[in-house]
Length: 280
Length: 307
Image 1 (cartoon, helix red, strand yellow):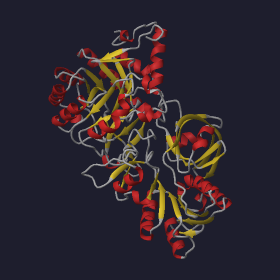
Image 2: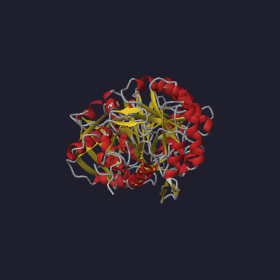
Image 3: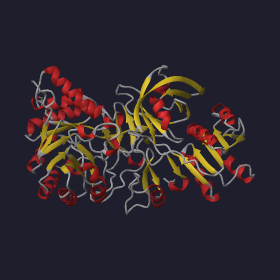
Image 4: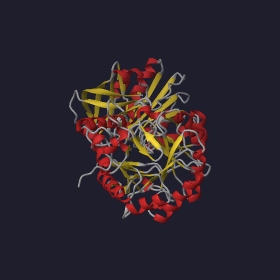
C-alpha cells in the first residue's frame, strides 16, 4: 500500500456513460491483486474533495486500467482529465479475491460489477482454471467486456434485463437456469460483483445450493485505508472473525448487537457470501 | 530549535515539538499512517474516541460529500477502553510524540471511569474530552450544549487524573465562550475547537437522506474553517488556557489563521483522509512562513491578530 503518482495514458468510451482509463503506475502494478482497488485524488484543489475508489480492472505490465460509469461530479471530472495528467493515488488497497484450488471458476458480473472480474479472469487464466463468465446488463448496449472474456478463453453467457441480447432476465435468473441445466459446475469457485439487489439474490441461491462464493462490495469511502470507519457493512461476527481474526481485522462487535460491522475498504472489499448480513 | 527557529508549543503539561497533530477519528490509532509519514515528527498524536464499552456506532451509509466538505456520522464506533489499552497502547507508547486519547461517555460517571482507567496507563499523555460529538443519542454534544453538564463532566474527570485535560467544544451553540468558561472553571487545562456542526444531505432522486437511517451527520472539511477561526478568536479573548484549533485545516496557511486568532496548536482532520502527508506538509509550511516573516519563536505567532 503506497501513495504514488499515476499518469493517465488513455481514455476510451466503451458504452454510454462508461469509460475505460489506463494509468502508467509500475509500483501499483507490481503488487496489485485481483479484487483490490485504488483511491484516486482527482485534483490538488479542494473540490471535488474526497478521493474516489475504483477497483483495478486489468493489469498489463506497468499499466493498469479502471472501468467506470459517470454517476456524479467526481466521475465526471475524472473522465474529462486530459491524457498525461498525473494523479496522486493510494493503492493497491483492500483484501482481494482468493484464487481457490478448485479447477473451475464461475464469474458473475452485474452491470459495472464486470470491472474487477476481468482482473480475476486474468489471474484465473494464469492459474490454468476453466472459466465460466456470466455477464448481466440492462440492455445490449450496456453489455461490457464480452469479447474480452471470450478472448481470455472463458465460456461466456450473457443476460439482458430487457432481452435485447442473450438470455432475457437478471443474471441471477440465468445462473439458476445454467445450474439446473448442468451447464456450469456447482463445485466451482464462484466470484461475483454487482449491485446490492443482485448480490442479495445471489446469496439466496448460494445458500440454497451450497455454492462457494466470494463477492466484492462497494460503499462510500473517505480514507480507503481502514481509519475513518465510514465504509462499514453488516457481517455475521462469528463467521467473519473466524476467517479474519479479531485483532487483525477491523470487525466491530458489541455484546448487545446480533451482527458486526466490517470495513469494506480493508476487511473487504471481497467477502465470502456467508459473511454478509443482507437484511436492512 | 530548527536552524534558529523555535517551533515548540505547550498544551497544559505537554511540551510539543511542534504545533501540528491529527484530529480524533481521522487517524485511527496512528499505526495505519506509518507507511506514509514519520509519526515521530508530529507534535502529538490524537487517537479515535474511546468509550467505556465497545460501541457499534452509526448505521451503514455514514458518509456524503458536500461542497468543500463531508457530512459524516461514525457515532463513536470504537473497541472500548479495555481493548484500547491492551491492543493499541503498546504501539502508541513507543512513539515519540505525546499520545492524546479522546474520550467519550453517555454519563458523567462513564467519562470519569474512562479517565480513571487511562490515568494509570503508561504512555497516555493527555485526555481530550469529547463533549461535542453531534452523532450520538446520549453523551457527546448533549453535554457540550449544556454549560452545567460540561462543567460536571470536566469536574468529575479532574478528580480522576492529573494528566493534561483538553475539552473539545461543539460549535452547535449560540455563545461558545460560555462553554469555554464552564470548562475552565471546572479545571480543564486546555480547550480544542471546533468539533463538527450538525448537518444533513439529501439524495434528490430517491428523496432519502444520504446518510440513510442516520439522517444527520457532522459537517467536516474546508467549509468549517471560517467558523472555527471565528470561534477560536472569541474563546481566546474570553479565557487564558491554551487552545487547539480544529476545523477545515488543509495546509499551513489554514493552520496559521487559527494560530493568529489564538490557537497554540492545531489539528488536521478530514484532510488526512485525502492526503496522508498533510500533517507533515503543514509543519514544514509553518516553518517556511516563520522564516519568510523572520519570526523566530512560534509562540510569538499565537494570538497575534492585529486589530
